[in-house]
Length: 188
Image (cartoon, rainbow, N blue to C red; front, side, top):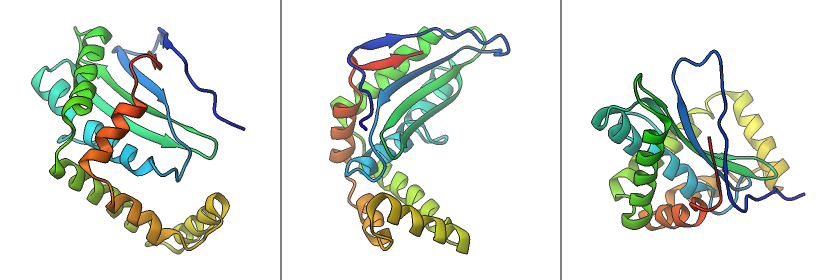
């Protein structure tokens, strides 16, 4: 079974009576888990939306002060995945402001790429999380089972780590150009 693919822009407005602040989110079709392009996508998500040094945090939270938080993720599953980039507005600001500034950040990555420092910082963070996750015996067993179930190779860990070590600024930029099209996404 293949993941259904978006073939246009879908715009949805979701009303949440409990939400106190508006939020904006872009969502794109993504990849299956362990796809060859998964690692650059994970690095891109980290560069854009993970932590205070991320591009979106610097731009939307600190500089423009239109958002209270930002996030970006490359979600991969067995049949397919999705990429999401979003932000929650500060009081007095609109989802449209968030959309514009998020798009500026995406366009910058597509046109100018990311820096080697950003890529190295993201790779270290991702790989450190993977290694820390192996400290417990149950987590190691889960990972071996996952590798066997998805790839037929319980000894995939060295190759998995190599995928992330091989990520370059160029592969992150190529991922953004290919997987974050303006004409095939959900805007919420």
